[in-house]
Structure formats: C-alpha cells, structure tokens
Image (tube, rainbow, N blue to C red; front, side):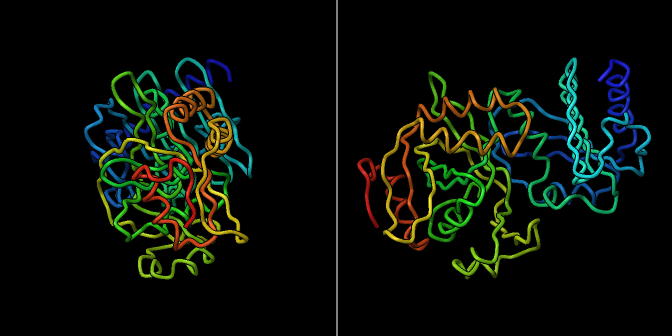
Length: 338
C-alpha cells in the first residue's frame, strides 16, 4: 500500500476516535483496555464475554469500535474494503491493517499510538466470532507487542498451575477442556488464552481471556450437564457456554498436552518430545491468527522448552478430569492409564 493509503488509514483512526461517544475501562486477560464506541449497548456486547487477569503490569491499549454508519465504506482505501471471502493485509510504519471480507470487518492497529480500531460494515450486527471471542485480533497484536502470544489452546488449572490442551481444530480440545468443568478444576479457556514465556525469575504463565466456551451438539451429548449453561449461538452451529467468571488469576504452565481421540484404548497420558508438542501447538495457533507468526513461534517454542510435554489420548471424556488432575499433581511423569 502506498504512503497516501496508509495516511488515509491514520486519518480513519483519528476519525473513529472523534466519533466515539461512549467509553469503558476493562481487561482482556492481562491487557488493560479503554474501549470506545457509539453506545453503551455496543460496548457491552464486546465487554461482557471478557475475563480479567489483573496485576500483569501491561501497558494500556485503546480499542475503538466504529461502523459504516460513522465511517462510510468509501472512506476506506479500495484494497482494504472488506469484500466476499477476500482477506487483505497491509503493514507500514507502525500501522497494520487486516480486512476480512467473510465477516465484513477491518482492523486497524496503530503501534505508534497503542490504538486499535475495529470497523464493522453492518452496524446492527457484529460478527459471531466477535460476539463469542471479542477483540481477538487486537489482543493477539498487543500480546505480541508485550512479548507474549495468544495461543489456540484449552487451559485447565488448579491453584498451583495450568495444563494447556493443544491440537488441530477438530481434535477435541474444547470437549476435553470442558469435561473438567464443575470438577473443582478451573477453566481458563476452551479455545484461546494468552501465554507469556518464562524469564530468568518467573515461569511461563497463562491468562484467561473469555468467559464463554463453544461446544457443538456432539460435545454436548457427551457433556449433557453443560446444556443448562447455554447462553446463545456461536458460528458453525456451536453453542455458547457461560463459564460464569469475570476474573481469573494467571497460572504458571505446568504441562502441555497434545489431545488425540482413540476409542480403541483407555484414556491415558504418555510423555512425548518437545518437537512433537511444538508441531501440535504452533501451526494451529498461527493458522488461526494470520499475523505475527515469527513472534508467536518464538514465544510458543520458549514455553514448550520449559514445560512437561504429553500426549493425552482420550477414549472417555469422563476420565479426563482425573488425568488432568494427575498431571497437575505431578503423578503422570512416566505415563498413566485411567
């Protein structure tokens, strides 16, 4: 994109800020956010599914929600006008733009001013994934700025630590994660969470982001007690499950489990190499997010190097809480069957 085009994007950020009349302060996991928009109802749709993970000391991010009613489509440079199923990305001089035609959205990420703008083509309806996992693009961008990453993983914890459940889409991460709901273990996320790599003085840690999980009908048949927690619909026919938490403390990452399904055996856990774990973890995360791949890879690699790594083979989801509990307790160091 030309300098003139990026200059127009900078002007769009300024215009979106001017048009915003309502403001709210909140957290997306560890990220302090000042979210702005045109109505309190609009802001509530984005804020209500979020979970705070306070005490991180991260820098604040400004997020502005705007629509075609405030900024007409014609104001956007043509290459970045969302259309059909086309995805367009532009980056120059601290400004990143991501247009996604399938959802009719444009994200503008201004590094120089720590500001993100979400432009929505249809002002009456935000995309389903923004309703269930709002501000995901902004959270991933700001996590990268802070030296962390937004991971595509389930996260189950107790007071001492957390187990990340990883694998490709469709591997059963959400079902496996949600099998632990109501068993005394904490659910920090069924699909996305923010992870920080270890330092010389601190372990790698995970932050919850969202209070809504997503399950399809097959998963709900396996976990029927969760039907009473359904609060709405998500995309691809999934149901939204309320985890009923607005705040979760960060937890150190104890282990990473590659989830696979196998009905021919009993549910069991066995150690695997860090290379296999990274192959199960990183590509899925990067495919989901599109941008900042190298930074994300570096963070995930550092976390994998610092954690115990297992394959969790699931035959019966009812066995999963006991397995995860054994990992958190350190009892699965040499593999166990349940």
